[in-house]
Length: 438
Image (tube, rainbow, N blue to C red):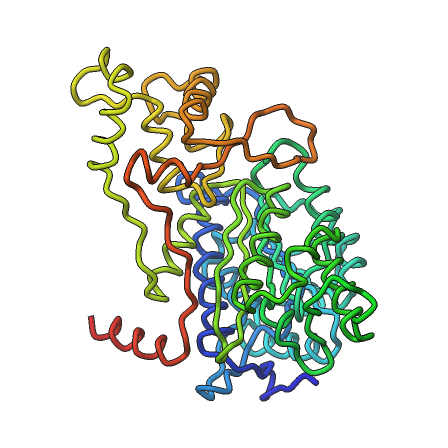
């Protein structure tokens, strides 16, 4: 049952919901500043933030008894606060629940009175605000916005527990028409721990593959998980008696691998709203910088250690192993193989790469596609990279690789980045106090 305090939807979790919205607000601002063309281009490019589960725009945090902006509220705040620079930014808010939608209308009237509700609900005609409101189910709303000129767009899926894979395929299939085409980003909510701890009338997943011993409630949960992944291959990896924490990690990794069908870079960020509870925001992009910036902000807020492998030691080890590729270079020059390898290690989420990665352009003095592919082939032959074996939907023959973390530590003395850890409410309060003092 949904609860509201005035117009704000009532949720708990200082280190969950509030932190999630802070991360999204930071990312929306950063993303729009780049994809709009920025000040240099006069913010002239069409952009869109599409919230597929917009809620009310405000959230009441029970833990601290405060009202803060929800993700859709952050999108509207960006739209209004930076006007007229945001004239070409569309904010599209979809909310099926009638109570949430009514409160969303109230929040807009109170906080952003310059936005006309009547105009925002009208699909056709002149749109001075470029704000769109839909009290529709997801499928109907997606059909309507297909006809809008979105430009570069973020789609934020924020359902109760998870997104059905058919919805991912539907939106991605219409937007990403070429090999890891940029211009479309997904942010997905996944309530990870619910699958193993249950909630209200939602049962946990069973601990066995034997269907004959599943309860009727467990069968429903398994079917819902099939819809999450869009297949049944996950069952043998999760329906067992492993520890809950281990199965949570496996579930996120399987989902991450599935999303790599459409996106080079998939970044799951963990959140800890309450003891034992765990959810993830999963950022999906084909643009390296956005993912890297989001991770940096999350690491700063949560106190996770920065990933800073020792470049000098790694380069010395690389030079000793492959002195032949340094011999013809001036003293301070680095071979293309090294420059690409170090960028993959430090900046490519998941260690994924191919010859069309945009951040490889200009990495050296002569970086044609052929030279980049040659360097990747060399790194693969030396064991630093291995085939990614990701089946893409464009039938592309481009070779895709990922870092081989069985080889990189032995050869370079570089360990993989540590797994991100969620911050607890008490830890977040203490950390926020220290940051304010500094």
